[in-house]
Amino acid sequence: MLKKIEEALAAYCRRTGRAFERPEVVMFDMDGILFDSMPLHCVAWKNVCDEYGIQASRDEFYATEGRTGASTIDMLCRRQFGRAATEEEVKEIYARKCELFKQLGEPPLIAGARDVIDAVLAGGSVCVLVTGSGQRSVLDRLDREYPGAFAPEMRVTAFDVKRGKPDPEPYLIGMEKGGAQPWTAIGIDNAPLGVESSSKSGAFTIGVRTGPLEEGSLLASGADIEINSMTECAKIVSQLLLI
Image (cartoon, rainbow, N blue to C red; front, side):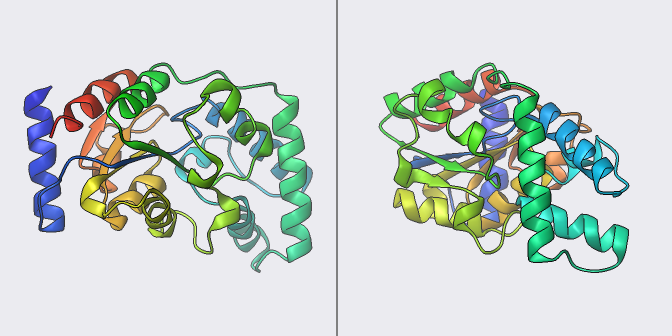
């Protein structure tokens, strides 16, 4: 494990041109990192596409995970209808998608996520949420499932950005909220677009393969280290907090 972390820190230094310092802020994606919600999101997106005559496969939404709902709907309309989605379509389709998602029940927590948060808080660093989601049914569970971890002012959601993932804006806003520089910030994400966003922001980026992604896909998207679980992530973060 220590050798893997040392290699990742060296990769970060080569990528950014400077050494990583003790993290002041650890930024967490939500779907697939805190909640095992992506299987339900994929079903809800596929169902709403079927209702609106949009061809899509359920698994393709793993690849587009991290986009805001508006961006996803616009992408689908451009592909299906050859035009941008209207503002009315975005509001209507996203509201229906959220309704379908809520009907599927509450997603379980990701195993090991609480351990990562506990390590961050015990080490005196700040937890920041950085998600492309605007799904209130999941956002509203944060205080209940992860009490004291994510203060309201330490959350970046779909409502806070102009350019969602893979643009670095979400993670840059996360650093700003946490008062950290890129070389003192960690981004934890499970999606290629999210990993790309974190990497472009200059944060040390941990890619966690909690979804059906090929091995190496998150490294290819810019992760400094790729792992398979949040349980493993807790061990890595604990070591980084000792820098």
